[in-house]
Image (cartoon, rainbow, N blue to C red; front, side, top):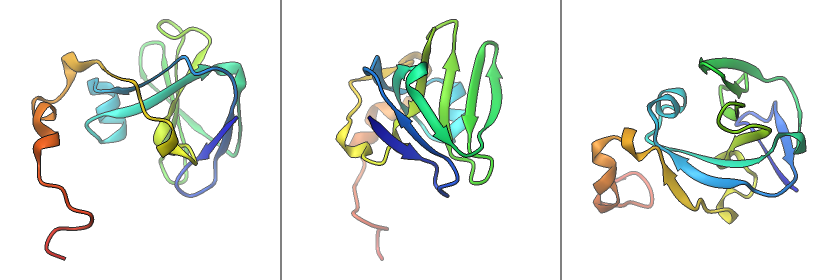
Length: 131
């Protein structure tokens, strides 16, 4: 069983079951919803999800429900019965042990930002540069 939660701690969850997939999505809907270039989603049977706290829902497109913490805004859960029947996608960066569960694919690359292809070539800093 994996555990996780939102940034402020108002929502905590547990998920059990077999992982259906774990991928980084680059679609424009995920980008706009999360404010990042790609969102990592780990997918499980929806009946394995238990959470405490209040979530708010947003229908970001037809048949899609995104749930987030209404206090801090952390995106948590994604439902799309048309594409992922009986499954819930969880933003895997919200897992308590997120580093232990690497994604296995990039998806929706047709919508990726053009500069994502070479982003790995940029300089890297352990903290803010020049600080």
